Length: 438
Image 1 (cartoon, rainbow, N blue to C red):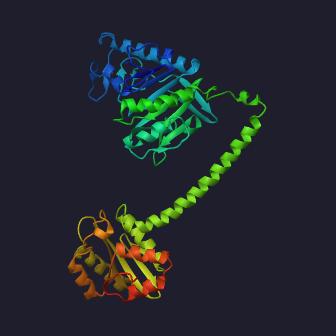
Image 2: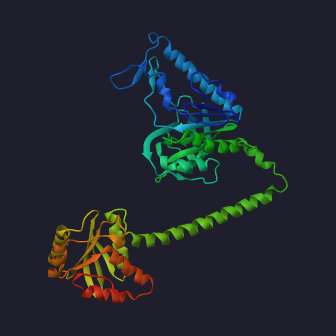
């Protein structure tokens, strides 16, 4: 395998390094890896910076730079077309946020940017059409929520290893056609934006991979090299013509049936995994009483816990809900204090909410203040969950004061087989701080 890296700081065997302008013909390699970020240096130091912030070149007074750039990008574009369409090679593109590029004045004006080297192609899939390079869009978007969509792809280990490094841009198309219609999405973020794409083109393929800023060059190549070698070893191009399927060999039918069985088994396992995830989410809701993602998660965990104890839960405010049962009815106010014990202001919020409920809706319920403080610490090592003034006020007002950890322990008792009615009775009888009985 002969590989060439342009502007991409990789290190390792079978890899040549060069810059975009002086490299040998790109068609003479099996794999070409390009980072578009350094390409802007070909024009930025020399172009005029216009008042609108764009870089501009004026043929006739730029000492031939615009002509040289157009010739260089046209040459590299043709070499990549030969690499992919005729040579069955691989182009790997590091996905970066697009730069402003440079505008070459003329009639009409022409524009070059960091992705102008992409080969020209017209792809059709059903009712969808994609023209390269102008039909592909790179949108700036940073994140670390990369999810590998094709775990069996040869480059999946590379994506998994550096996923924590994050991405800088996402892929989309100019006319809204789904990229999945033309290639295989290898990774996406939590909202479904494509981050990595395997796009078949002619006899070869173009791989768009996240930038993974700061990734070690030697380690990156050690993961890229076997994956790219495996793709080069495939005997058939990814975009084989439809007539090839008519030439079936003896024994292929059995493989097809086995593949269909595996597909059905994957669907069954996916459904089973979904059921398991849903069940685990129920337990995680209770664990949010110990270490929530935020106050919203703590409130959800509290609602789930009171429901499991047999209360009818009704949301009435962002941080409060009604918990009703034959043993007693409560207005539950949830207080979250990351660094210090819960203070009197939370008690006052519960008191005001309780007065509104009694005066406006004529509901006679008791107040219950649920507190979580110092959530970063192990529950057994946390300090006081509320200030002493809150404990005194809760006794004076006949409120019930509950720590999130004690509510968690009560739910654990019920899950272990305890009668939730007994826990509801102790809550109904309590005044001030409450703890579950063991």
